[in-house]
Amino acid sequence: MSMINIAERHKFILSKLHEKGYVNVLELCKELDVSGVTIRKDLKLLEDKALLYRSHGGATVQNPYTIDKPVNEKENIRREEKNLIGQTAAALIVPNDAIIIASGTSVLSLAKNIHPKGHLTVITGALNVALELLRRPEIEVIQLGGHLRNSSTSVTGTYAEKILEDFSCSKLFLGVDGIDLEFGLTTTNIMEAHLNQKMMATAQKTIVLADSSKFGKRGFGRICGLEDIDEVITDNGISAHVVKRMEDLGVKVTVV
Amino acid sequence: MSMINIAERHKFILSKLHEKGYVNVLELCKELDVSGVTIRKDLKLLEDKALLYRSHGGATVQNPYTIDKPVNEKENIRREEKNLIGQTAAALIVPNDAIIIASGTSVLSLAKNIHPKGHLTVITGALNVALELLRRPEIEVIQLGGHLRNSSTSVTGTYAEKILEDFSCSKLFLGVDGIDLEFGLTTTNIMEAHLNQKMMATAQKTIVLADSSKFGKRGFGRICGLEDIDEVITDNGISAHVVKRMEDLGVKVTVV
DNA sequence: CTGGTAATTTGAAATATTTTGAAAGATATT
DNA sequence: AATATCTTTCAAAATATTTCAAATTACCAG
Image: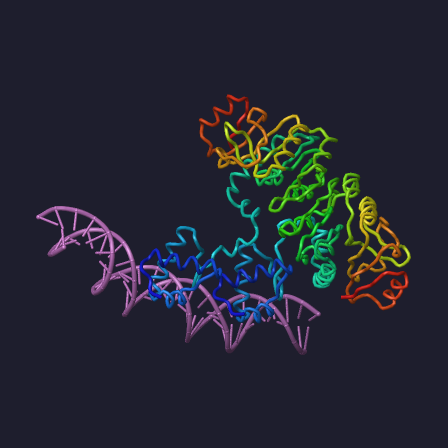
């Protein structure tokens, strides 16, 4: 096989990669009739463009260490920021409080940072939040029931909403996928957005946890407008301008 | 099996690990056609990345939700037996089935071994079971809601029982703490026992998963008598005499 | 179009690094 | 004590990187 140019070669490499899941340098040398040095340069270029993962002897289509852990992966990004946000949010909890924790990776760091003085009641639909809180004997956990959507660790549906009707909480800690000044709060899933609305109705205050990357983004399911929430906790990647606009809407903004 | 490179090998190890819950060095040597030294180096690398736990002779999954020690310790004992029991139970599931999975360490191995052909609906109160099943897109998971007791990963209470009323399932897979020929099935907690009764009413067949150490033991909360269940799956540590007695009571006994 | 220069691409050769397993000794398990 | 598993060491083999010069291509003024 003799290639016209570098672009053709890259196309060939990528198509083989996607077909087989991996490629190796020696085979490509023969198939494309070029030297190993060239193939390695090609692979390096493609790796720089995040189109493949390099490994000794070849390359794979995806990082082998991140198999089927979508939630876990998200968890690793911005770990430090999220942890700070979680700490700050946890400080808002008072003894004998009753709170709701909604789903999202940010609220998991909240759960990890909760070390209550007195008794605490937590209502949550997120399995990972519930499992995290179970360790602490002073916390009473109410798990919402219902449908579990793939790739989310949180329930949705009418069962969860029914259970919520029996409670009244002081605060809702809400993790979102997007915060847009015009469009408001959004999440990727319409069912989850609906449950979040019910949660807001059950709680006296809504506190949103969102790292700065969430600003300006819009997810599919709209939860509410910015004017409906009480407080946002975020990291210092947020612009002063956005802070100002939110404060004008009556939202308290805490930057950690 | 001849692997292209280290990345492919690691991917293979991890996927086997996630499927079975553990791997051992010798098997991997044969399967991947490399020496033990290499496998051990691989496992060490993966352990450094916190992707597994090393143990003599092999490795086990790193469970990110490894919370309360009591359950976790239990989980490690009799892993091999439990895995076999789980496999056998999973084979009973048919395409388009609707089943209930109750709490207990044995049923977690069931969950790990479920790889349904068609669609499958699973109702469960156990958070770890739900989290495990979430990975598989062909499974629809209904999480029961309610109170979470400390040191258990399963809900109890009226909310869970209410949700159950809306369903009808073909099978209930039940993990118990004790099986006594006279006293019947027991669990450590009275609330859980009550929920288990409701589950039995919701399912047409009750299949009990119990390794042989559970026989002759009595927990605090009685679930039902042996005559009320349909099948028991256990390991070969059980005595022939006990098998005979149970079969006389109309219980099908499967020894793996 | 032509001829010349600059930039890019390529591979051979030399060098460096990584991977692997055999062997030997240490450690753990029963 | 006997056996299986583990770690270390070391050398060979495979794979990568660097360097440099030749080949190709791109570009542009005349």
